[in-house]
Amino acid sequence: LRRCRILRCVHVVNYSDPEDHPELGDQRRRATADSAAQRMARIRERNASLTGTAAIEAAREVALRQLDARARSRAELHTAITSRGFSSDVADDVLDRLERVGLVDDRAFAAMFVKDRFSLGGKAGRALAADLAKRGVALELINEALSEISHEDEQVRARQLVDAKKRSVLSRGLDGAERDKAFRRLTGMLARKGYGAHVCVSVVGAALNEWSRESDDDI
Image (cartoon, helix red, strand yellow):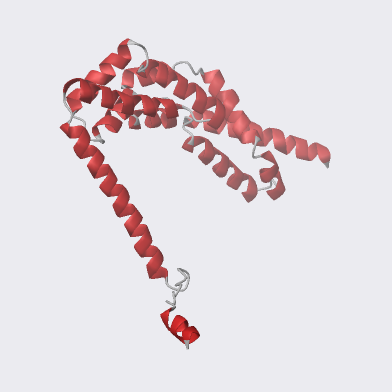
């Protein structure tokens, strides 16, 4: 009798697998998104209520945390600060102070950005200019940074990018239509990375001619 009472008191928990009930996963994701949005709303409200030195110090902490993650332009930092509830005036005040001590420097940022993206990813010209413009860097500073890449530098880097595709191109052959397809693919790849038409055509043409001669010699 006692055992029966105990069994009657047991509460059975039904587990619902999200794979069997996808609506549960959607609900949880919405709840997570809502909670994140609510947290950000509270942060913005709290920051907006700050004044004077308290506002400056809190906004400065936002900027420094952003810079700890990676180098950023002044415009990116301004957006990061204002998106957290601080006024534009507070953001400008903080960024002016950071500029005076060299922690914010769009000229240095643009130069480093161009150097890294060109050497590591092979981006050039228009692509780099567009990336920097999205980050709010002034056109004058963009052009100054891009001027550090010479025409010869672009030729060499473009050829490196093309040579990286050599095995794939040769596996399809270089006869007739395949050569035309390879030319379009390779020039398109360089164009997307920001290289000018002259560089694209000259570099790809030279590479295909060289590879064709090598193939003929192997026969």
